[in-house]
Length: 260
Image 1 (tube, one colour):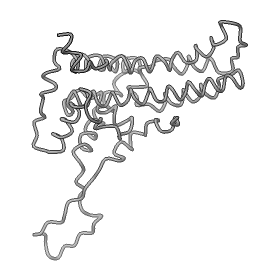
Image 2 (cartoon, one colour; image 1 turned 60 degrees about the vertical axis):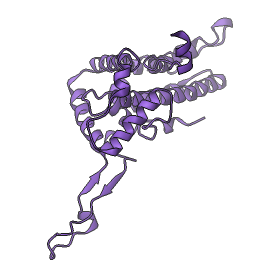
Image 3 (cartoon, one colour; image 1 turned 180 degrees about the horizontal axis):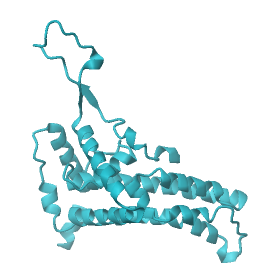
Image 4 (spheres, one colour; image 1 turned 135 degrees about the vertical axis):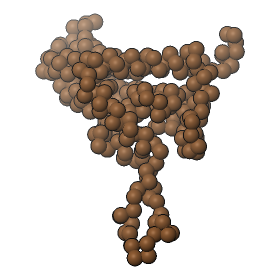
């Protein structure tokens, strides 16, 4: 079972971590008397890094202008709209869409995302941080294709599912050992706090609701033995349900043929 630390998002200032960068060569017709060290050469960042930088600026403005409740509602609306577009009537258009660029990296990534949301191949964003994934998934300005954005949100949902299994096991073990779930609750709160702002906002009053359960203890009483655990894990389960809600199960092609 993976540890929670594997899934906690990095701070915004680290959004470019693991995004490849290259360095431009010095110009062949540069002044003969001018010598540039390697550190002085202008970095040529990858297309993804440039897109993430622009998306980060837009996200910072958006987050600063909305209350937490407004931001949470916006995040849920974006997920629902994107899901309807990617899996609904616009699906053929989204799958056929080609970015208006000659950059082979952008074109290849768009193709890979389309393959992925159709159940084929790997997610092009499975190595990114939670912060980077949220920048892509919730960006509505057109830098990323809808299938790319869906791929990013699906990876967030996958990590939620992994973390949920981890914290459920930890909570059950702690409750069996002590009759309390204080450590698991504190870890839940820390996890939510570390999420990107638009993700954290979608769980509204999680900190208040969970904090109220710290220190509470119940003795097993027949069918009510797990009632405290059920209460504590409600937020976690809702989180995973929300992640799954926008990720409908893809119907295999052969199954689609049978129903048509």
